[in-house]
Image 1 (spheres, rainbow, N blue to C red):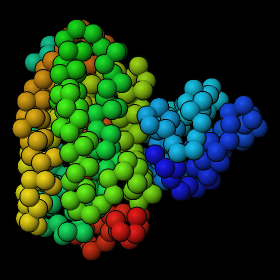
Image 2: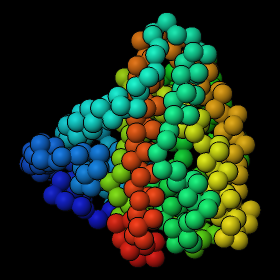
Image 3: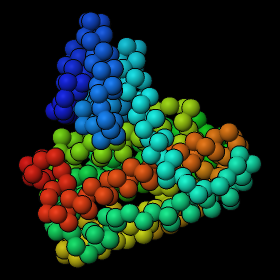
Length: 349
């Protein structure tokens, strides 16, 4: 991915450090660690902090496709991981605080069976009463707003499924088999042209957008980055394997109907199957996945490891909490005649 433009002192220092070699950066890394500590102490809302979220996004990207011009040796540089851990702690704490509000009313104990876990997650999925981006897209969104919607989604959708795949070697038995079954569909069942990331790239091209991964990172706000950073946090840390399972479960449970609305919104503007295939594919696939994810993945994991119940719920409720904030931002911006992006629009991005 191309290196993004910095958004503050922390991301500026990080990108400067990454432009060099790990062996020559001891002093700069120490400065970076101090800057990170200072930034954490200053920010009133780490989830919506552009500088911190961009820094975390870049640090996580080293474990995915990497950053253009950045030495791959940085991925496991201990002092850089120390900086990442410094940022992850307060980010996770903020997510747990937000997730706690979303979890009110869920009554489960560690002896819950897979059906009880799934039923609780289905109740959680049905409890969302915030602004609906999918209904807005279906009924009102302009062509420019459709492009903005795709720009926001591209930060994850062009690498769809990758953060959750980190969990596969960390699961066993029923939960592992369920995860593999879901992920196999996400990756097109072995056919590259059917990979969901490939289908999404085709949708972007249909609206005249650049489908290269990371092209629009500079255009999206901190909340869009935080949604992806949540997945990377839970996927890359083995201790949070329950959270990434819960995240995927709620992701699948809240996907089918919204994707139907998204497809209708694009059809309303005259787009055909080449553009809507991505959404139509998810209507069918996720209607099946939601049962597998709820009962076999999340529920099966809790039956095998009851101590992970709280983290399964955390992953699900944190996903919904971030999604609610993102939905409020998108719909609020559009209803007030503003762009939801940091730049004027996709063309400027």
